[in-house]
Structure formats: C-alpha cells, structure tokens
Amino acid sequence: MTSSSAHQRLIFIDFMRGIAVLFMLEAHVFNEMLIPTLKATSWYNLLDFANGLMSPLFIFLAGLVFTIATRNKQDDIRSFGPALWKLLRRIGFIWIIAYALHLPFHSLNKMLHATTPDGWLRFYQANALHCIAAGWLFLLTSLIAITSEPNFRRWLIGSGIMIVLVTPLLWDVDFTQMMPAPLAAYLNEQHYSIFPLFPWLGFLLFGAVWGAAYLDAVAAGRERAFMKNMALIGAGLLAMSYVVALLPVNLSYGTSSLRASPIFFIKRLGFVLLLLTAGWHLSSKFLSEASLLVQIGRESLLVYVTHLIMLYKNVWGGTSLVRLYGNRLDPSQCLLAMLALMTVMSLAALLWGRIKQHSFAFARLATYATGCYLLLRFFTKQH
Image (tube, rainbow, N blue to C red; front, side, top):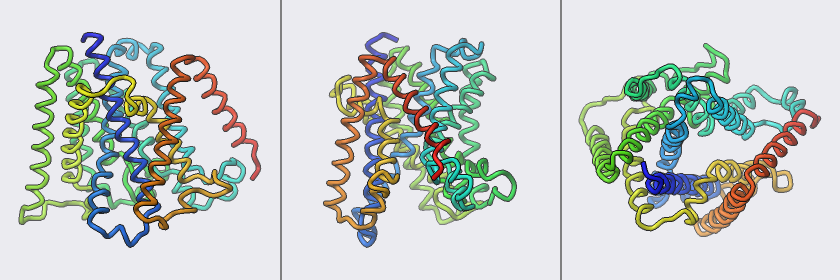
C-alpha cells in the first residue's frame, strides 16, 4: 500500500466516524428533548430510523479500526510485545469510561451505601463503549489464538453469524437469575442495556473482517472494485430483508422483539455497507485531512463521551440538560440545541486535536492527570 493510499484510507474512515458520532449526538437531542406528541409524526419516524443506523455504523467502524491498528503488529501482539500491552491499556481505558458514565454517584462511599438494586442494574448496563471494549478483547484473544489469517477471518465470520442467529433465543431470558448481573448485562436488553453483545458484537466482528478485506483490496490496487462489490452486497442484504418481511410466513423464533431479529441485523448491515460506499466516494473526491468531519472523527471518543456528559450528567447547577429541557422543545428548538452542542463538540475536537498534534506527550500527561484527579475524588469524596 502506498503512503498516499494509506493517507486517503484514514481520511475515509475518520470521515465516517465523524458522521456517525455527530448523528448520534443529534439523535440524543431529539429523542430526549422533543415534545412527546411530535414523536408520532411521519417526519420523526423517518428521522428516528436514520438515527438508528448510526450506532451499527459506529460499532462496525470500531471493528474496522481494530484491524487497522493491528494490521502490521500481529507478530508483536502474539509474542506479547509492547503492541499487546498498548492495546490492552486502550481497551481498559474505554471500559473505565463506559462504566464511569453510568456511575450512580460520584463518590465510592455513597455508591456503596446509597445505591439501590435498580441503581446497580443501571450501572451495569452495556452501552456502545462496553460493546466495543468487550469486542476488541474478543478480537485480540482470537488474534493471539488463531495464527492463520484465513482461519482468523473464518472464525470471525462464523462467530458473527452465530451471534446474529442465537440472539432471538437469548433475548427474553433473565440472565441475572443464572449469573452475576454485571455479566448478564452483556447478553440482552433485559436490564437497561442498549447495546448488549447479542446482536451488536456482530457488527464489530463483520467490521473487522470488512477492514481486512478492504486493506487487501487497497494493497492489490482493487479498492474501487471492492467498494463497488460492497455496495452490491449492501443492496442485496437490504433487498433480502425487505423480501423476507413480505413473506406470508412468520420466520421469527425465540422472541417477538424486532431488535433481536436477524432481519433487523441484516437490514442495518446492508445500510452500513451502502453508507460506507457513499462515504468513500465523498472522501476520495471532496475531503482532505483538514476537513472538519475528518478531524471530528479522529476525536470521536472525546466527542461521544463529552456530549453524553453534557446531556445526561448533573453538571449544570446540580442538574442535567435532559432534566432541564427533556420532552419540552419543539423541532426548531431541538435543532438549535443540536447545532449549539455540535458547535461546542466540534471546537473541543479541534482544540484537542491541535494539542495532541503539537505535543502528544503533554496531551497524554493531561489525560493521566485528569484521570488520577477524578479517581482520587471518587475514592475520597464522602457525599
């Protein structure tokens, strides 16, 4: 792969991450703040469906990013070299953030003595970051255990298919009756989890496989043909999902929940492949490293975490924006709130990107210092 090809590839991926994280921000604003009666309108239903494609895209891209990060480091990882420990630190960091976002209280003492059973279940819930961290750990252990690249890809494809097919059988099971609640939270949506491993891990695994095939195509000079084939596959998956939905027979099993259905997964995977194709064409023709969405994509974790804090955490005089404005805004007000939040997040991403570019060591020190302060505060605060 030439350096220019690699450079353009990173622009394409970062662009798609920027699109995904900003649309997730928009979804949270409209879902939480729009007047409830307006959610029955046709325009909101269309918007809600489009927003529902961003989470599969975001998690799919996480699998793709894992492939890129480990592409030329597999020998070092399998020999337990520095690349392995760096990746494990990254996984641990994401996992800590994921659980920190659901802390019932910002004090260990209060958390241990004042958290209700329901509060603990809310703390254990699996969100997108939990799914990504667990998925990366699964990919990492699989990469170490399976040294053959073809067998590794077959394992990921087989695991992804198995996850999709098994999901309906697990969906209505209360696993807290069989195992500790922190583990049960990863298996289905029974107790507040929005992104359990079944079926969402499937998007990450297929993203990792897609990434490997894409890099092979780029190295062989077949990138355009590959993207064309992916568009055809995406269209085929969509067509199949709609045709199956029209069949006069009921193919559901295990549960009646639409979100657990393999058709739910197939339809969204089809849309993800089409979105990736469209994003690739846009980035190859119109975007550069300086493009705003590309830079936002490079700081997607920062944007994702910070916008959740600003919306849901009590950082506004002891309350949150969702508590202040939840279910109270009309569409124009939601739009203004979304644009304001997007502006703040964009500026934060640009500023943090500049800091890392000019002094990565300082950025890393600032991250560690902030983390240590928050941990110390969490362990020592009494209320």
